[in-house]
Length: 304
Image 1 (tube, rainbow, N blue to C red):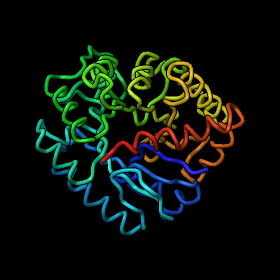
Image 2: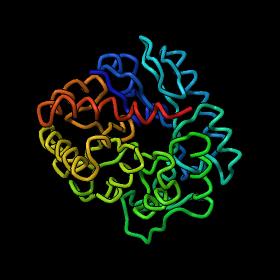
Image 3: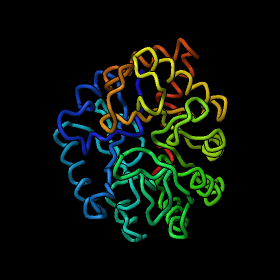
């Protein structure tokens, strides 16, 4: 079964990446999204995003990926799409947002783990302890609202992963059904109470927009049990919760490979076929196919 993955961090991975031409081919990947991660701790911004866009082009040439800005007829090669993780990339400028779109970026995560010019994250990290802390969280800023409007006009997907609950509500309000939005790599808070996971209300809002939730494989977001069996059980539980909150059309995959510790259940793209089998057994082949391919394909087909 072919699949689409809405998020990985292989573009900025130091050392050997789990995501490679070989592993994607072995897993049956039709399209892999590669995030240009902008680290606010290093005061990275637009120049870094453009540098990573160059790195993306070089990777596609080296690995024989088919770079794309929209989902179209597939070739024999794995398609690769450039995304941005972190609104710091546009440095408070809609002109720079447009420049990233012209460079091929078709999805942008508004925040990472720190507040920025666009809005607030789900739980700002304590920079000393590097853990999710407790804070008072806002939603979109006035500029963030303008950026969301501009992204919709351009045809760039708004990604609310890492965003606060209020930010998700604000995005739904601004778009008001005019364009789908997504959470590229998140989980269901109803299945495991972690701030990086989405409330049932957030899942419904994404589903009502026509968007999808890319269910991640980050062990700490899925469950306390970090064993392979515990993670398998947890992944199935998150799928069940997403189904209950948003229905079959909201399901998608956003692995976060190379952005988190490997999951002992599915540690690389080459192991996605095992995930497909488990999903078909736990739910149905139809649900497995929707989660792994057709729902994300539907959303990506709306891009320009």
